[in-house]
Image: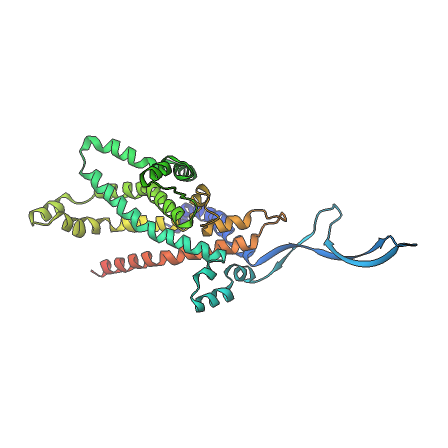
Length: 342
């Protein structure tokens, strides 16, 4: 293919990627090292109080926002370097907490509190989604041909539901006198408050994510199972291989590229967990990095947004995703080089 033809094909895609990905990313980097704040001025005013015979007047200096000719507050944008990152990470407090081995002190910092839950959420749901997806795919693959269509349709329903709506539905089942809470109270003969502590909320959020995402892993693995060589499987059966040996030595190696694909997608998606925090209303106990960024962008009591901190939080979230992706991509690269070397 000629260079001109190649550029004609990839040019529009490169332009859109620069416009909608590289541009906003550079904007976030710039905003994370700059702060926009109001300009204040000192004004000398005369304050008079009534006295016995005459008023007593004094001159006071007051600080007030500086306004332009239209009455709008004047703001300025200044370079602050990594100050927003420092305010977010609070390295002095974090280092002291590490030295003392005090997680309670470290968890008082919102960033580490969110990082702890985000990592827990991502690393626990990943093997569960892979295992459940593979189990359902193997089960459906062994089912009768006439039953596969209805089973696949029913299995995909959790993935079709909007995440926030699904999380709210699960919450309503367990909140207060919800159906499942009432059943548990009747069964255990005691009062249960599922949303009174953090760990029960985390269990519900983890369960919901696994239930919601497993259909995606299932449909990918099921498609991969249709391409497994029947001759290889029949040869393994003739050689006396057990079901477990066929799964370990034939099926899993064949599905390894799809397992890597599902793992990468799930890592990127789970590390940006947000809908569960909103749906389960867990902000008092559990927050995620994505929710922390959203919170910085919400108007505070003074009517301001902490855009610089939100940008710094976004950059740290992205760095975390890249760090997590290094391990599966590095393993895949090594496997690729091993295959090429024979």
